[in-house]
Image (cartoon, rainbow, N blue to C red):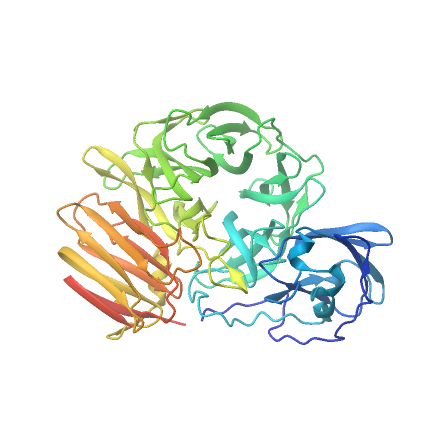
Length: 562
């Protein structure tokens, strides 16, 4: 199990002062108030995921100090989440929780009898010890709670910073906040305190960070999701540990309903900052001299690519074409729904960019990854050696809220280096597992462990089957004649969603000689070793796959180092 170094939380749960609150005041069919005397660091809120949202306003001295939405337990507790009282009031002070329940009382019963009133407790610690069999060993996950899009990723002074869409108050989407983790090797991640929290402008949706070398600061751009979606910025003087929100927010507004996910970067070719923004089903491009005042330049995409869903999470970068002196620009566009196998996915466009206008040189729709669980793909700003290192959210909006975990939901993909390659006169995106993954290769073993890297030397059409004693299996097939690679997870445990069982199939650009397959507790990521194929799929076997069968090739299995 990967080491999660926690800076805010203890590992063991101690319930101190059980039922330390007064009895609730029930004020109507859907309204209640709960008084809390601050005796410990945390108020542990009991969550029942099947229930509707309870909207909580926390009041101190008659002033609202925090708002949050929690699925408070009615008759069963799935888990607890911590509300940090120490950030809201002094010891022995009194807080008031003003709670509005959604849902139909005919199905949930009388509010006074809800289990949440008995199970709401105070504690000086919060349990984050992992007890879930599906938590990955070598992929980034939140310590607890829900996670979706990676945000604001940058590298500075030897440290990779990963921010992410986070719900601190449950393991389903809600309360969007920027969580924060750091790493020195892209594999082992250390949890950091909350980076950017919601405010009066709204929840904190996706965005980006830039390293402003001239002013020795890190600047974050994010979508403030309130009554409208607007773009805001925050500045960090301590390498991204804490941010001060800009007092002139928002810096960009629009009448469009879907107006989000700003990706900023320094463009040396025009000596200006660029920002690309997802607006409905197009991307808008802006320029700036100072990161505060943005000039609209152009829009891209109305006639190109897939338009079966909303465009989101853009990225734009210049890349080298392998084996040539050519360089091209690539625009990443995540879309939901509209993916090749349903739900969310990542498409891309290859072309030219003069700092103000992007033009695409192909008419076909191109997918960066042909699995079903690869979304919100973005790259690190200021990565060393000019590398373009990407992470994706490893899930799909069709079932992300229902996958069979509780303490946490969702992981990020393994890090991937992006470049370009040429095949039959066309230029495509290359996706290669980042070299840091070689550092966790352990000993070569014969028996299939729970987590591993499998390297398959291919000799034409090849079938690879991973299975367990329950009859569950995943079958991968490289068809040399059809020039396709497929992954069949229809026999992987999937009772939580009808959308989960599927066979994903990818085109292959040239002959595959070697496959690299990364297996973790709840995912399989398959790559052509030469970076011309990427396929990412979740799996949830009820027991780990412990058997491998390969026909048409030879497999070498590497343990993953702890």
